[in-house]
Image (tube, rainbow, N blue to C red; front, side):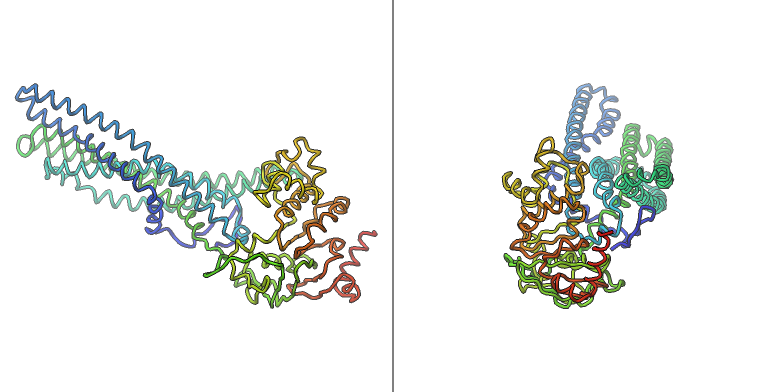
Length: 594
């Protein structure tokens, strides 16, 4: 996994791009091999038709015109017209077919990377700016569009054209053909040195583009803070610096990229001049006038594809810098995944046991949890309290299997959750966090996200229990009111009530509330208590809370500090101990009094 970085830090590749990765790109073409085969046949036919032109011209100059054979001349003209029509039709078809295949391929690649992102753990998203992830799914894939559609058309067409042209050239005069190829080694050496510099330049550019995208994403997400502290000028200055680095990297990359074309062009001109020299010196001896004219036509047909292939190679080197990042993401291994032989967790009762659980986030970090053990019976409510950073959220993240335990085991109904499929586990759990996410769309669909096949009546019933029905009906369009991304048009308390309704609709057997009432004011919390009792009834619940008034009725209160459970018991039992819970409760009570 890549190390944590910010918008002003370049990402380092853990593995460099290699030829095997080009094969991976080719694998995306396999589902379209039939359509690609038809397109290739069309390209072959079109190129043969186009290349017939100089050959027909040779026949006209060397045979039909000297002999004043008008019949043969008309036949050659008619055949030439047919080749133009065939070439035009094949040209039109290949553009449509290859473009469609290229876009389908891009869709498959984008779907693969998005699907893979759904499986990656929280730690992946915590370790890098989201803008750097977003640019891989959108911008980098878009950058490949021209390469895999127009570029693919030109490459296949030019390769076929090159091969067919060489066949005709050797058939006409093998000596002139060998002379045409004499400067190819010089071109190969020039191309090698340019591609090394170009790959390096575009890798640096991809970093700067990623940094720029990350800063833009971060700035938009934090615009309220920026404006709240009147830091717009500072944000603009920072953006200007990041944008300038991107501009400089782009100009450097373009400067290197444009170095290839003049080399190819100059070598093609020198080769043509060489053929003119040889042909003129020996015209009528080893070559006829028609042969020389036809061969010069084929020289153009030969070097045009070479130049186009050089341009495609240029584009391929450019795209390689982006493919590296795309495949790096696809190769990121999920830390949490179904074990070999994992089975679906059957319907659970809600018996939860932590058996001597210890956990660290990575091999170099200290233990976040140390030998945590407790047992929750079905239907019990377990509260987790303690100072910030004590390990409360880590406990519930292990229960949801967002992370794997380092030592020990987490069992549900006596089954080690590491042995069951993740989907079957989480499908029977409901998690509510303090930072509730509301999707863009209407309120009805946001609540229905907990159960996609729920009827409107079921959604409304859940909202009533969660005490969200009253404020929803006061909105302009009620349950069909459209909310923006993250629910910015709603208050924090309203978003939380919608999340309660969503969770209640899902009807999970194990419920997790991670500071779920923190954003709700005291008056709303009082109204919610009755709904919360409905939510907790009949299911095993885990509540992480700093506001101790919300967990007095819990069956067990676990006091967590420094990754360990230091106290456990009911509210009254813990108060009687005069330990850490007593001190937490007293400090909150005195704060409220003051």
